[in-house]
Amino acid sequence: MSARIVPPASIGFVGLGNMGYPMARRLAAAGFRLLVADLDQGTVQRFCTETGASAPNSLRELGQQASVVITMLPDGKAVRLVLLGPEGVMAGLQPGGLLIDMSSSSPVETRALAGQLGELGFPLVDAPVSGGVVKAVAGSLAIMAGGEAAAIAAVEDVFAALGKVFLTGASGSGHAMKAINNFLSATTLAITSEALIAGSKFGLDPATMVDIINASTGRSNSSEHKFPAFVLPRKFTSGFYLGLMAKDLRFAKALSDAVQAPNVFVDVISRLYDDAERALGPQADNIEIHRYLELLGQQQEQT
Image (cartoon, rainbow, N blue to C red; front, side):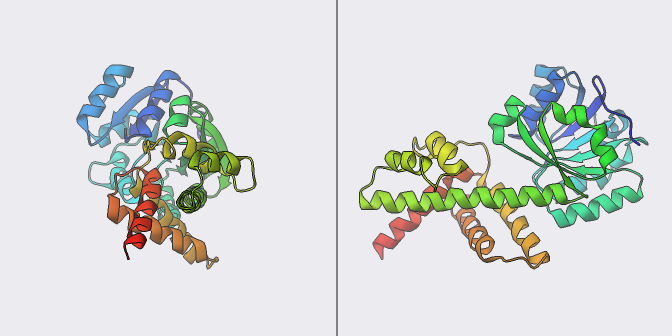
């Protein structure tokens, strides 16, 4: 059984992006000693200056010095490269070290990676998060944790600094749950956008529509939070990229196909976000699916 990881234990954190940066800050504030790495050296230097964290010279050194290594990267391929690539984390990780992938990765690929790491004697916990940048800053993320119970219990204090943990089952199940959640999130955002665009074209006031929807049966997290905060004021700045949402939807589609579940809606929504990503670019905000649907409406008017 893995020993419980408590402050001031050393945590390696790889990936200081929109979500990773505030998450790592929460861990530093909780008293853990942070060892950080990112492709952007300017971001690494800024984080170290702000928090007192250190930046090892290589991923191998990061692995040597850390009790736990957390990856928060764009996808599972990047995670595999960071862990198992030449001079990667696994080249230095000491016996008893734990690995946590908090990225949004393919559940199928995660299960395979967990098996490979398990053969080397290192458990992998997949623990993707939901809640966006706001909840990352506040330390109130929903954490979907899959993997060995003993490994998850050992990092209870690590997770406590970041949010609330939901146990999902075996390795890969956390990433499966994240893909399913983002499928639902993306769908409600898109269909609410389509509804508001139609109503607006008929002459209804968008703000009034949102108020009524939120007092009625059509309400969702999208209508209650995303539309008032980002869509109505035309502030497409949620901090989560359209390309990342499209990727998560492809994971959800692959999961559905792998288990032969009904895939009518996931196929349609995944294709919609893929099309939007090609039109607007992967670094457009995911809320801009609303703008993409507006563009489709304008094209229909011109035909």
